[in-house]
Image 1 (cartoon, rainbow, N blue to C red):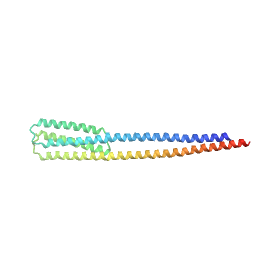
Image 2: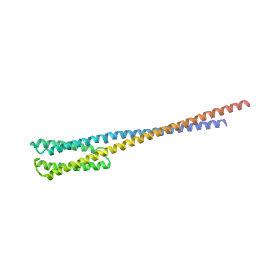
Image 3: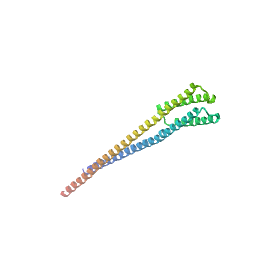
Image 4: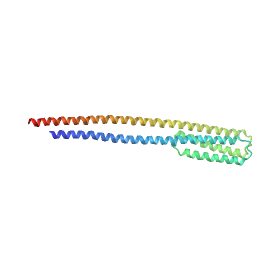
Amino acid sequence: MKWTYIIAQKVKAATALGIVFVLLFATSVMDKNNFSELQHSFSSVYKDRLLVESYIYKLSNQLHQKKILMDDLNARNLAPTNEKNQVLNDSIKTLVFSFENTQLTVDEALLLNDLKEHLGQLCLLEGKYSNDGFTCEDQTLKSAIEHQHRKLSLNLEGLSDIQLLESKHIIDNSNQIIASSNITAQLEIGVLIIIGLIVQALIFTSKSMRSTYSQNNTLN
C-alpha cells in the first residue's frame, strides 16, 4: 500500500503545482491586457485630447485674427488684407482636417460638424463683405459676421469642455485598471501562500508516513 500512497502524494503535489502554473499564466495574461489598456489610455490622452486641445486653441486664436481683420474697416490696402485672411482660412482648414482624424466621440463629431458649417457661412459672409471693399455700412451683414463668430466661439468652448470630460474618463478608467491589477496581485500572492502551505503539509505527511513504515519494518 506504500506505493499507492506515494503515487497519491505525487498526484496531489502535481495538482498543486498545476494550479500554481495556471494561476501564474492567467495573471500574466491579465497583467498584459491591463498594461495594453493603460498604454492605449496614455496614447489616447496625448493624441485625442492634448493635441486636440492645442487645435482648439489655435483655431480660437486664428478666428480672433480673422475678426481683427474684419473689424479693421479703415484698411487702405485691400489686397494684402484679403491675402492674409485667405492664409488664415487655409490654416483653419488644415486644423479642422487634423481634428477630424482624431478619435471623436458622438458629441464631439456633432460639434465639429457645426463648427465646419459655421466656418463655411463665415467665409461666405466675409467674401460678400470683401467685395464691398471693407467700407460698406451694411450693419445687417456686419452683425451676421459677428453672430457667426459667437457661434464658433461656443462651438470651440463646447469642444474644449469635451476634452476635459473625456480626459477625466480616461484617467478614471486607468485608475480602475490599476486597482484591478493590485487586487489580482494580492489574490495571486494569497493563493501562492495557500499552495505553499499545502505542499509543505504534503511533505511533512510524507516524512511521517516513511517514519511509520520504517518502524514497522524494524518490528518485523
